[in-house]
Every structure is written in C-alpha cells, then in structure tokens.
Image (cartoon, rainbow, N blue to C red; front, side, top):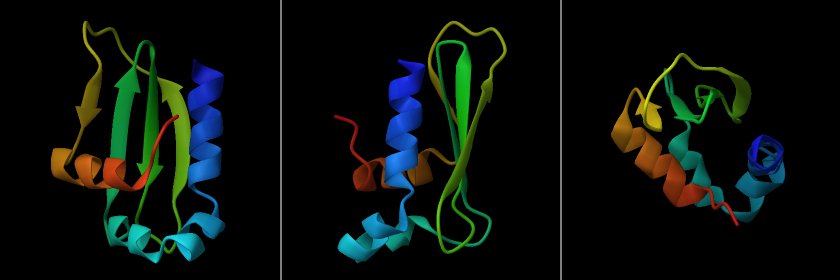
Length: 84
C-alpha cells in the first residue's frame, strides 16, 4: 500500500497535471500544506510554491487515520487528485 500511495503522490505532483488541468492550481498558495496519516505512516505536502512537493514519514501511535491541519484545504486538495 505504501508504494502505491508514494507512486500516486509522485504522479500527482508532475507539472504536466497543472498544464492539463489549470484549475488544479487553486490548491497552491502561500503557507499552504496538507498532512495526512494512514496506518503507521504520514505524508506531508508542501503547496506553498508553484508546484507541489511531498515527503513520507512515520507517525506516532494512534487508533484511526487522521488528517492534520486545515481540513478544508485537504478536502480541496482531494477534489484535484484522484487515487485509482
């Protein structure tokens, strides 16, 4: 599962996606970032610049999957990326 999410993240941050779907740029803005967690891992997306960058790390113990930070920004990001 981790490799699949990492591959999805790699594809979704390609500049070509912003050329094909310019409306996706609405997720970018000063100070914007999104973090989400699944299982024992967490992903952090930097949406601050003209393109998206991301990294994966480990998370602390928790019982449920979580989104950290601005939930509305996460929902907006999710409208522009599709898994599957």
